[in-house]
Image 1: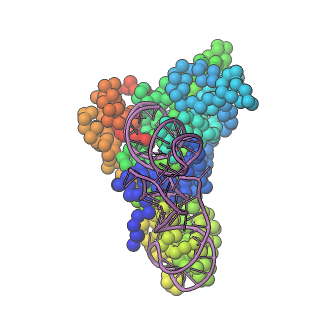
Image 2 (image 1 turned 45 degrees about the horizontal axis):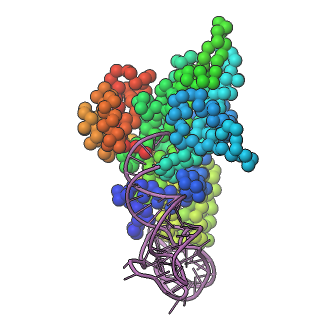
Image 3 (image 1 turned 90 degrees about the vertical axis):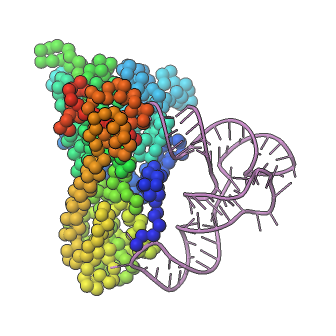
Length: 470
RNA sequence: CGGGAAGUAGCGCAGCUUGGUUAGCGCGCCUGGUUUGGGACCAGGAGGCCGCGGGUUCGAAUCCCGCCUUCCCGACCA
């Protein structure tokens, strides 16, 4: 069996385990400037799959991609009081350019509500122009005091959606649609991460928003990670940027806007939601290669069989990588593929092959099975679907096992040491939030008793989900 | 940004207290060979402005000052 672990075990030091995985799976490196990140090809391939899955859903929700500038006039930020207050500590500001001091400093975008607001104001004239549904894929900069690869870097990649609507109801409904049909659907079906959906308490709200929706996932150490957020911005930005339209009745009306985003943090969430002591465990839908064909040894018959299997997988539309055995011993190569989290290994060796068989191994459970050469493509294609579903179920079981209903703040603090606590929001209150803060815990989100997303934090009988978080 | 720890080969570390030949070890890497069903073995080899800058000294990886970076704990966040 396996020798000494390649990685620091999760139970010994979870943050160290995370760093080990990021390094050993060749996902990312620290950049030369504090907080910056170099995303390596394997990590970027995962991001690209995340990107395309989200992009597809965004387009299905009716939004169109566009691109706005990296540099934003400092004065734009100042127009929305809460927004500038929230972001000013983490802004990178350019004061010099072209060898001269700039008359007005420009900030490197921390998010684009302001520039996009400026252009929405220009483009929207009539109620017929609404809703205006935009999205952009971009990098943003928020100067981080305590960076961690993928989870919190000073520069990160993301998608930010920005929309303008005629009514508050329409804006609110659209934010909810994005939350369910883009984010939660993606998280469940692609990342295989179950979430708690809800709204943020006022203390955790986005700077300038009237309501913030969140998807909270549980990591393998029981901490919460906010995997995506959607914001109802009310008329705050419309007022600041004069985003108005003429109604059917000929009146000038302020728009209601929304914004919503998901970032490279998702890669960190993916690592921590499914990873184990042997490394990354990828759901097939985000794996750069759902399958690796491993030649046990370099041998003519073995390589010929690998080629055949490759052909069959190709025909079945399954992406795969071929490990022809030229690089090191079998055990070494297997360990490497495990660290990288490849969902299925097809091991092709002379012993099995003599009987027309190959060994198929699942990364998530470690389960091995022996199948015939003729059947392997069909079996693997089906197995990938099963793994995708099983990984979601396993993550849900893990989360449910560590989520407890409690009736007092003190019990919540105990439960949130290793998972999530569900406590009536009325019991928490402002003093409760302060008490939680002292324990390094927060209210991650507020939900209705049935798990649905409330309209606002004033609804009666809301449940607060309390946890430690990233 | 506050408190703590640390920076020596790609990675993990020793050497520093008590300054003094050519700065070591393990893993990885390269070459050749034997191997290959869960991190193989033998032989040979390459690779260092000892984080950066300044100072003390005949002499600094080692002592002093400043800065940068990383990790942990807080405050802030996707």
